[in-house]
Image (cartoon, rainbow, N blue to C red; front, side, top):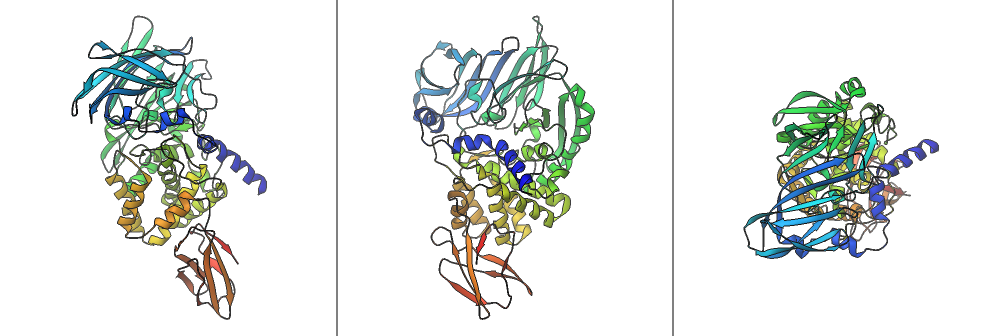
Length: 543
């Protein structure tokens, strides 16, 4: 068992490496602030649309192109922050055919517009760029552009950039709080390859120089790191699903050699979407379809274009992260990355510090899928099983405005916190209504942890402030200290924040009972010889 746990721990550490990278940073730099803060050069304008055209030169691993950035003026301003990561270069910037000047500060460009922008106006700038972008060393964790070849020697290119965001390959407004309301992506690549991206294919044209250009259009808000090209020797097969939003198109793009395997493995998609629509509400991007695209890396939640690289096997690369066995009955990448369509892509965090809203809810969705397949007991066993991966090294929520993520525990500690709150609610109809309400209220929005907390407490009519603070903002797992004497149970909370008072269910010979521990000792009649705490609560005991 120790050896198995070691292997699982290693795989969880690899899975969550980008978060760990941020969590280990002891100090913040000027570059962190440029990336993480909503600066005055960002706050005066609101993103509306990207019209992006990019040419991929596979022979020398370079890209070039231009991006029209459409925006609305919120308050008067004249200096705009645009982000593009070194060694990429901006060639020129135009506003209404007038050339703009700029000052570069690391990966940030401060662009001087020729006229003061007037509140309420909708304008656009045109940015030409080129360069040899950062190559991914270990995608998706150490990200960048992926230049690979498939088993037949054909080029296979994509990008994995959640940690560093899309500034690694094209100029944009690189902050999570502001998403474009839609975008157009034109990809030019060799015409013997197929180019796929987010949304729907609007046109495909062959060029005289041996390349082709595909134009993909996204009709929903989308975060920067989700805008991704896939270039390879792809074949396509399709299906449809009758869901809560009507007919949902299911599109699958895979390498030629893997077509039959994909047709078998991707059958899981329908049950997964039915499950998540039951719990969370309709799939958020019917207009843009649902796609799984084989990628030269493990996977990523690119909106309406999920990256898939799990080698057509169940589990996480053939392993069960919960150690229960249930995780071997479904494909982790299909389920987890698709779950982000609801939490991460539709409901998006405004700041990296709040990424538990993406990962905690989506890790909890894994448990709900197990429950959908095998029943409530199995789902509970799965999420409880994931506790062995929790490190409690740092708080889940980190510092704001400096592009800093918290602990890797935002996945399974976040999921177990939600599972614990479910026990406090103790009504699955209300619990389901909560998740559907979250997705309806914050549909296609960026949010903060505070907004999620306030909504949950109001909807449930429960004061969960101390629960959120305990699990999200400390590394402490509450401990129930107790003793049994003379037919009584004496108990209190320890290892907790001040005034922590979460109720707890205990299991007795004659059934279950809720007790209400506080920091001071309390007592209740108790006839059992030993104390058993309901394992669904993420707590420890201390006799």
